Structures are given as C-alpha cells and as structure tokens.
Image 1 (cartoon, rainbow, N blue to C red):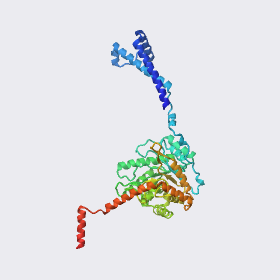
Image 2 (cartoon, one colour):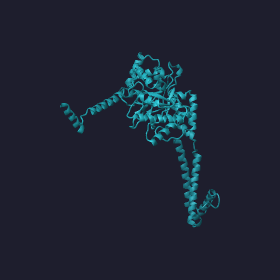
Image 3 (cartoon, helix red, strand yellow):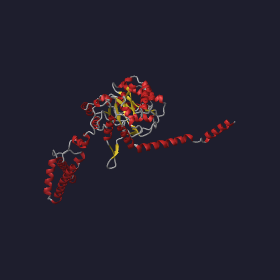
Amino acid sequence: MPPRKSLRNQSTAVVESSVTRSTTSKTSGTAKVGSKTRATKRKAIEPSPEPELTLREEVETKPSKRRKAVAKEEIEEEHLVAEELEAAVVPKKPRATKAKAKAKPEDAIPLAERTAVATLKKAMRIGAHVSSAGGVHNSITNAVHIGANAFALFLKSQRKWQNPPMTAEARDGFRNLSKTHKFEVHHHCLPHGSYLVNLAQAEKEKADQAYGAFLDDLQRCESLGVRLYNFHPGNTNGDARESAIGRIAAQLNKAHKATKTVVTVLENMAGQGNVVGSTFEDLRDIIALIDDKSRVGVCIDTCHAFAAGYDLRSPETFAATMAKFDEVVGSKYLRALHLNDSKAPFASHRDLHANIGTGFLGLRAFHNVMNFDTVVELPMVLETPIDRPGPDGKTVEDKQVWADEIKLLESLIGMDASSAEFAALEEKLQAQGASERAKIQDQVDRKGAKDAKKASAKPRGKKKKKAQEDSDDDSD
C-alpha cells in the first residue's frame, strides 16, 4: 500500500544517515575515539566477554582477524538498528486487516432482494452456481447477493486432484450463515462435482483416483449438512457403454456404503462423443444397478436435454418430453434442474449455454418449466454466462445478470403466455441473442454439409474396384 511504502522509505533514510555518520567517524576521527566507540558497541552487542567461536577462530589471533571481527559486529549492529527503526516507524498490521482491505465493499450490497417463496404462485426455488472462493461459507453470502433461493457451488477446486481439507471455520460459517439466511441447504443446495472425475474409468489407478475425489466431496457434503450432490456420469473412453455404466454404478454403490445421507444426482448430458448420460435410457440403466435407490437422483439440464434431442419449446413437446422421462426413468428420481438456454440448435449435441430467452430454446421453454408442478420446491440453478467486457476491454463477471434472470424466471410463474407482456419480453430477448444464434447455426450448417460430403464421397482404391465389380455382376 502507498502509505506503507512511504514510511519504509523514511526508515531507510534514517538508517542510511546512521551508516554515513559511522563511516565518517572511522575515517576522520582519532584512533582513540574510534577505539572507544568500538569498545562501547562490543559491550552492547556481546552478552559476555567470551563470544562463541569456532575452533579455527580460537586459533587465529592476528590483529587483522580481530579487526574483521569488529567490523562484522558493527555491520550487524547497523542491521539491528535498521530493524528497530523500521519496527518503530512501520508497525506490522495483523492479517485480518490485510484480508479486510481486499474485500469489495460493493459485494455487501445485494443486487436484488430475495423473493419470499411463499409469495409466489408456485414455490419455485431459483438460484445460480455461485463462487465459493475463500471458503464454502462465502457461497451463502454470494447467493444472498443475487437474490437466490437455491444455489450450487464447488466444494473445492474442480481443476486439480489434491485439495486441502475443509477448515472448521468454513464448515461452521456455512452452517451458521445458512441458518441466518434461512437456506434449507439439505434441500436447496446442489454442489457440483469436479470435471476431472470420471466414474466410468476402466484403468484401476485412474478409477481409484476418481473415486477418492468423489468420496471426498460426499464427505464434505455430509459435514455441511448438504443432502444433494450433482455430477456428470462419466465417459466410456471408447469402451462398451454397458460396461461403462456398470462401472459407474459400482463406484456409486461403494460411495453410498462409505457415507450415510448424500443423494448422488446424475446430470443428463448433451451427447458429445463417448459421454454417458445423454439419453434417459442411460440414466435408467445406471439407476437400475444402484443397491440403495433412495441415494440416487437426476438433475435435468435444459440446455443438455435440448442439445441431446429432447424438445422443451412448446407446451406439447415439453409435456411429451417430461412424460417420456417419467416413463423411462421415473419422476420420483427428479431432484434438481439446471436452467440454461442453448446457443446451439435442437439435437446439435453441442453444450453451449445461453442466457434465458436468448437462445434456441427461447422464453416459452422456461415458461413451461416455471409452471410445471413436478419441479415445485426443487433447487433450480442457473449456469448461464455472466462474462461481459469491462470498461478497460477485459472480461469481468457481471452478477447482475443472474440477479435479473432469477427475477425474470419468477415473473413467468402464472404469467399468461399468450399476453402482450409475454410476447414483448420474448421478442426482446430473442433479439439480444440473434447474432450468437446465427453464428452457431452457420457452424452447425457447415459441419453438416461437410459430413454429408464425406458420406457421399466416391469410394477409392480397393473399395472403388469392388464397387465396379459389383456393378459388373449386376449387369450379367
């Protein structure tokens, strides 16, 4: 800090002055005065007339060695003087003050007030995936900051395998703040698992590593009183899907036996590559292998479902999709939702989250969700983008986006979708996302054209010769 730097400079100046005076005394003063000064300094520094010496120092008694020893003592004294001056002029500040200086005052001011759920026409618990930087207890404050009635967080860094244990301060702070702000964390908190963990991993060493990180998170949940834990099912890595699903279920059964209360919540996926969970059948097959079915559930991500080919846009298609979920998986397993629009078109298998109403899903899809009785009281978590360009051109997080989206979703409860109010809101939001939708649609179209061209390409080499032979056979 600038004031501290200024005081340090003053201290340095005082020390430099002291050293200068000492040097002048040695060069211009009499030998008697210099000898007296040295004797006085030795008496101040040395606790006894027989300082500790090494064996070699005891043998060496030449005057030059003695002079060097005295000079060394004088330098050490100057260092002591400097340290004493700095301590007097610049007292050390406690760590708590330092941490307080880093706090952002604006974070203490809520961006939106929390809506009393009892005042809504349906008890919808809407929030966002907030930061837990500095300790899990901070997630409560961050949720209150945006007016959330539910929230998600990472219980530790999701980018590395090894993490320090949760501190008692963070644990107790989380529990106390949840009571203060009336968050029923056992129902409305949905921690998210690490992206590194793959419970479908076949390699033993990697599978053990994944299981260890997964179990650690479940244990953290239980220490906080949290009952739900959301995670991505896993990746086959090219192995048979049935085998991968078996490994996921086996790891879950093992984790359930090692814990007591946490419900492991499978998230549906968008359908990229070898990822497990993009179909309701994948989720059903995992649940079928779970020993204690009270310990497993499902979180439907609206963007992932849409990208995987489950239509949520009209009241009819939404009803059909949810009826299929109930038939294949069972509505009793639905424990949470991730609310995200999609930058990519229907059945594109691309996981690109968009802000509510601005993507290909559109506002009507979220009107369907907000008026669906089955999701009442379930935690609904926004994972929409909040990165915005700042005044200096750098990207910054604008949490006002989440605060506004929570209020937007709450306003859809009971709203007439055929009203002029809804139509105006829908049109406005679609206009905001028009350029992004056009860009992604163009990418999807070009990829489709490229794939079609590959599929229709003429066979080469042996394949071409075989095709010619088959043609000749047909003509016979």
